Length: 216
Image 1 (cartoon, helix red, strand yellow):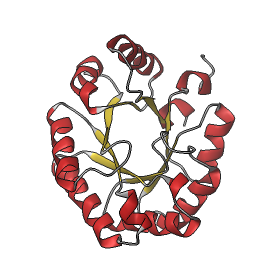
Image 2 (cartoon, helix red, strand yellow; image 1 turned 30 degrees about the vertical axis):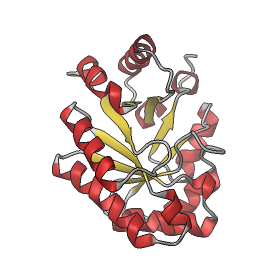
Image 3 (cartoon, rainbow, N blue to C red; image 1 turned 60 degrees about the vertical axis):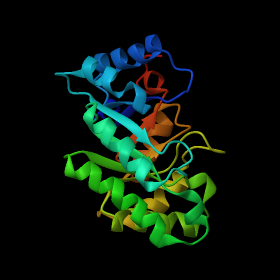
Image 4 (cartoon, rainbow, N blue to C red; image 1 turned 60 degrees about the horizontal axis):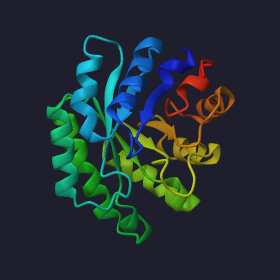
């Protein structure tokens, strides 16, 4: 598969304007990226622009800290679904993960997964690998799989670093073929993208999509 179909073409900067959102959306249409990934406010706008195309509309939930209440994450997911989203990328409760309250982490994920799956939408779960130890990455990945999400995802891109090949290898080893792995954050070249795929990632969240496909 060509690299373009691995890419969630991403613009999550808080200062992103409608002109910039439209540019990213057009780039995705022109190059058949898998999706356009935006903040929830832009979902309805992007969905309309992508209507009838092979590009999905995706957004983040509980982003970037993951510290919203579960009820708010579910409401945010339901609003995005009403606005036409195809895929939801939620952030786990990182503090509860670090504190070892795994039941709280899993129930939070399960609530958003249910909201997404009830509407036929795909749900990815961001565990923010930069803030976790190797053992926590493994445990968090297992929790995401147990919660029946579709993907476990490395990073928001808003923490201390983005994805690392080592993170992806740990996540893939933890989930096997139960669910898929998405690498996101800090992927800037075709070589870096391929390294993540080789490590087990089946989707990549990138803002440097045009550079990765050689069109920057």
